Structure formats: C-alpha cells, structure tokens
Length: 348
Image (cartoon, rainbow, N blue to C red; front, side, top):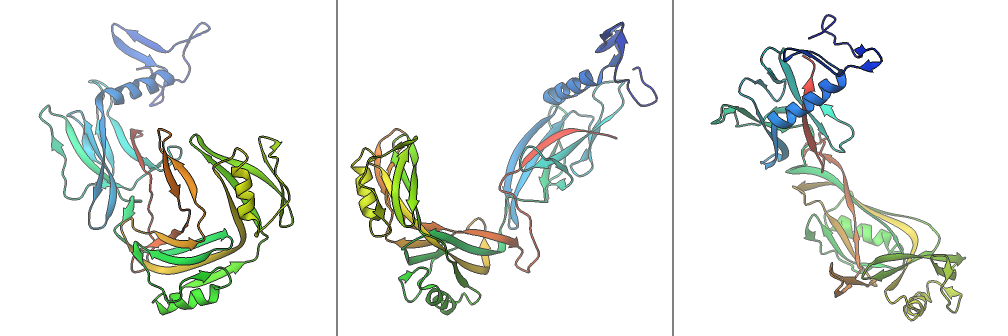
C-alpha cells in the first residue's frame, strides 16, 4: 500500500481526477480514506455478527451482546478483538461502544459476561458474550424517591398506591390542597415518616380536549379572570353562550361543547400546584410506580385501533414518578431504559 510512514495520503490525483482505488496485478496499492471507510463497513457487514440479548440476574437486567468474528480473531469485550481482515494486511482492532440515544457513543464499560467463555463455533468462527455494566436497564433492588405533582383543581384524594401496593390511609378523602397538612399527617401515621405535602398558589385555568376516534383535539380557551370568554378550533370561535364562570359552570361549558359538534369534549380545571414526596423507598425491579386516585373524575371517551368505541376512561388517576436511584446502602446508581451497542474499528 502507498503510505507515508503509517499514514495513507488523503488525496491522490491523476491530473484533475481524484483517485479512489489504485491496484497493480490485482494487488491493492492505494485506497482513499473514503473507499477505505466504505470497505471496512462492508467487511463488518459480511464478517461480524452481533446479536442483542437482555439478561436478568439477581443484581440487574443487563444489555448483553453475542459477538461472532472470523476464526483468527482474539481478544475480549473489555480490550477489543484483534485479527486480520485479509491475508497480507496488518491486523485491525474491533471495539464495542454504547449509547442511549444513537447520537452520543461511549467506549468502555464492557466485560465478558459472567459465567461465559469465548467459544469456537462449528465453522471455526469465534464467539464472545459481552455485557455492558455501566448502565443496566434496571437494578433489582434500589432506593428511590417517589413524588406526585399536579395542578388539577377541585380534587379530593380517595386512594394511594405505592410501589404496587394500595395504602389504606386513615382519613380519606383529602380535599387538595386544603387538606395538605392532614394528608401529610396521615402519611406519617402510615409509616412514611419523611413524607412531605406542599402546595404553591396558582391562578385558575382550564383546558378543553375533544376526544374523537381519529385522535384528540386541543381546543383554544380564552379567559378573562375566571371566566371563559371564548373557545375556538382552528382559528374559529365555537358559538356558545359566553361567558362561563369557573369553577361553577365547568359542567355547563362541557355540556354546551358536546351539544355543539364536539361530542368528546372534556373540560379540566387547574389551579394551585400540590406535591407529595415519599423519599427513601425500597423498590424491587421496575415496580417503582406511585398513583393517586382522585374524585370527581374527568371521564373521556376511548376508541380502539379500529375506531370501535370501547367506553370511557375514568380520568381519576394522577401518576407520579421516581428519581434519585441508588443502592440500598445509598450509593448512587446509573440506569438506562434504552441502550444500543455497536462494533467498530479502533486504532491499535
């Protein structure tokens, strides 16, 4: 090959024409960087086989990869795999990288999967099982902080589910946010000693969503103070008997919209934001849910994939989230609900 030391010329020309490949007697002398890149991609497509496997053990659920390479390749998932692409060419190294978004890739974090060893297949190819250890899909046992935040107005809490278990609090229902202190006291009495319930004042607003077999339409609401003075769709006002005073005329506004060709309209009210936090909860696997059941409901119609009406969803669930994932002893842990692996060439 034409080289300057270990470097290949980036631009070889014959007159004004760029040379992509130069050979003599079927012996390659030069390949442009573009052609070399293309050739390496082709080699990978023809000679390297990778198969993704999700493996769950007592510690976590891991992203693993079966890597099958030609017979002369040696190495391991941690340091890479070295072998010749063709007789007479210098050896090349292949390495693994990981991404959770297919845009940013990182190397390292790969090991030979515990309990496995490289194997030789019947056709002589070599196969390894690699595991990415830096960010499993989820750990089997973790401490998490649970929280629920909502601005839904005029609601009372009638139920609480924590990590898949319904919690029988004393004092249901809790009108929120007026009953924040009483709700927090009930949580403390139920064993959630560090629980907090707080609220932040916010003005009364509303949304209108029209549910149809073809999807949901967000109607545009205009308010003056606590009065709805206009509801429009695609720039056109829906003719109703405005204004509607909230919260007392919420049901009247919804009824008027449903009588005016928006049969799936649901009016929902929002005001003061309130938040419940349950820190330091021991969770197992992916069961890290927290839900509140509220009343009154905000039911909305539902259709299946084929446009068949299937009834109403009660709209009475407020979902929370988890954060601050760490080991039971408090050590921080990194997880990723998405993970992608790729095999590529790296410098020797």
